[in-house]
Image (cartoon, rainbow, N blue to C red; front, top):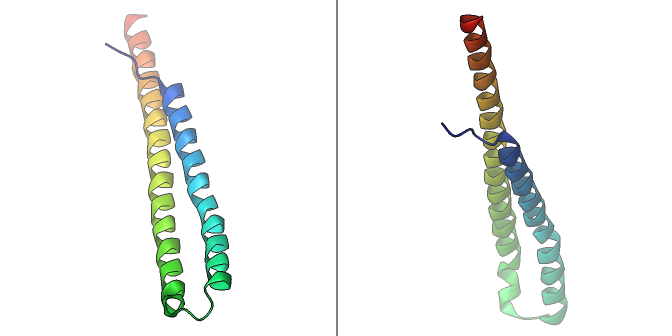
Length: 98
């Protein structure tokens, strides 16, 4: 029976956390782009909708980060549960055979 590699699972959860941090950094990049657009396109009518576009991007960014963070949390929980179950089974086997 193959054994789950819980250390690998936890490293993947850390990778997901890193991805969530990178997604959050995109907020600053988008803000800079919005500022540059406002400065370079003064008087253009599309600028009226730019605030709403920024709000939608921020909302989408948060949803994505929340999903990534939940996935990482779930992976860590599953790794811990597997470790805990394996420990219980090992102890039970030891008690039964000794």
